[in-house]
Each structure stands twice: as C-alpha cells, then as structure tokens.
Length: 115
Ligand SMILES: [Zn+2]
Image (cartoon, helix red, strand yellow):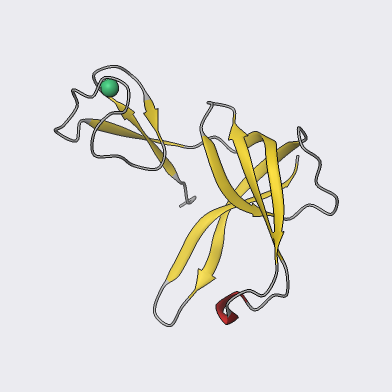
C-alpha cells in the first residue's frame, strides 16, 4: 500500500487543515471532530528553505535540507529537501519516506525532490 500523509477537510465549511486540528480554524463550529481525511498532493512550489547542521545522532547525516512547500491544494508543509541547488519558486515533488528512525518506530514525512 502506498503511504500517504493526510490533510483534514471540515465537513461543515470545506476548509482544509494540515496538520490536524480539533476545531476548524475557519468556521469554528466544528467541535465534534467532523473532518474527512484526504491525501496531500505530491506537487508543490518551494516557498523557502534552509540547511540544518549539527543534527541529533538519529539522523545519521551531516546536513539536512529543510523546505517549506506550498502544495497544489494550498496547504503548506515542512519537509526534507533533497535538491542540489534549491531555488525559491521551483517546482518540487514529494515522496513519503522514513525521515527518522528510533529504536522501535519509524517516522514518516514528506521528502521533496526536484520535479
Ligand atoms: Zn469548518
């Protein structure tokens, strides 16, 4: 099965939320968890990016590129960026991959590549 990361759409007003919220930020009437999950799209535009150094040992790499990407549905998501020379405004494509491994768990996140 293909892994997905989900956004949550309010059943009352249609506002899309990522990450999950208990109350809709738009209509604020939704306090009964009335959200429908829908997979995040993979295509987006790079909004900004940065490189992190001095990472915790669990990453097992020296440098981590991080980007904020505006996906085609308007949701902004932070993900790892594996692009040689990232440029703001460039098209990127996300894959859902293990971004962190600890003793008993793998954590999945969006990793972005040049589209
Ligand atoms: Zn709503």
